[in-house]
Length: 187
Image (cartoon, rainbow, N blue to C red; front, side):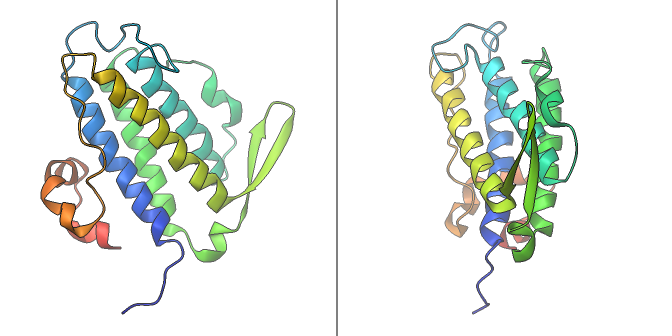
């Protein structure tokens, strides 16, 4: 048995996030015209607004984790893309960056202090705390999109069959979309 890897969980969460994005965005791509933007009952008023929020928050935190200076510019537009295909492409890119960050993460890097640009101040947090916050945020809002899909022509997809070995039979399409194989998830 191998030694305990304290950052493996973050890699697994990053992989799960990317796989869930592929599955959720694929379901959204099957929406009928007008359903993506349609007003709905949720924290954000539409599927488009909710997916846009996930994207802009990911831009904000992933940039901070990488040591960037994007800061609040991430939020200049509430809905930076009108079309799902554009939003999906950008979400896939930030998901790729998050996976790469987590694959490089070391135990020392997990406790590194991250500067997060806020209005008029710098928030300082440990990288592992920022990651935990970010993964919770993504899960929370993906759940809202999942619930909103229940009122559309698209079936809400299963979003929790990705990481354990027994789920391999459910994730083939998503792995192929990301050009990953099962060994990727075993790291």
